[in-house]
Image 1 (cartoon, rainbow, N blue to C red):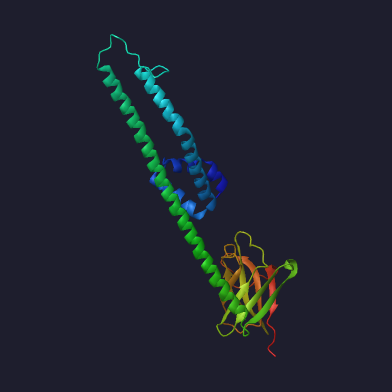
Image 2 (cartoon, rainbow, N blue to C red):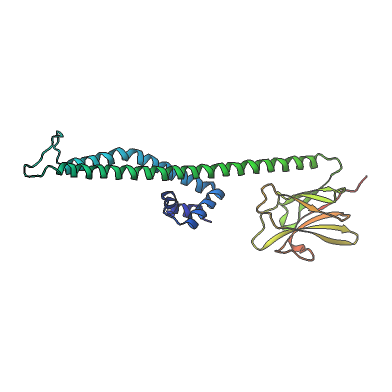
Amino acid sequence: MDINAYIESGVLELYVAGALSEKENKEVYDLMLKHPEILQEVLEIEAAIITLTASTSQKTNARIFEAIKQKLGFDANNSKVIALNKPKNNWVTYTGWAASIILAAGLLWTTNQNKQLQSDIQTAEIKQSYLETQIADAKNNLNEANALLSVLRDKNITEVPLAGQGSFASTYAKVYWDKEKKQIYLDAQGLPEPPKGKVYQVWSLTLAPLTPVSLGTIDTFAEDANKIFEIQNLNESQAFGITLEPEGGSATPTMEQLYTLGVVAATP
């Protein structure tokens, strides 16, 4: 989604003005939760409207008052000019109209203030929800980091560096193998993002004879920020390798697309 194009489309201004349908309002609301840039733009639009309203409300009221004075026949010195042939009840009529205009203006101002208050409340709720999400994500990241640290510090964990191969010599990865729990932690930070339609596939290898067993594909490579993946490994692995394969994976590794390979060090 092109965030800048969406912001410049004018939809957010209509949202703040309350001119969208219920479905459109929900779409904007959902986008504000997902994209901080859109939330910030809505806040800036509302702030601009509040500033503009504050700077123009007094001038607008003054113009209305001047129009009422002219309608009632007041001159610049606030002296009332009444034609002699006017019936006496004209003053009451004009006063009634003036009161109606002032009341209508007051009701309009109150309505606008209520709408602004409702919009401010909704924006505050969105900000609170966004902050709660950030806090929850931070807690999850902290828990994951602590779990990873405990793995890295475990003396029973076997570390297997995976070096870049052939045309991919600049790539690298590392496997942390927990034999007791029969799982590995793959640090794939040294791999580039796979092209569209391709995924990385992890292999467990035995060397005599060479037998590859697939440990699965990394389908969430782009979405994972720290590029550390937990993978089950039930094999007596002697080496690990990573190849680039079509989406869904392959039955056997494509050796021309072998990115990294590492041999498990022999136990003394």
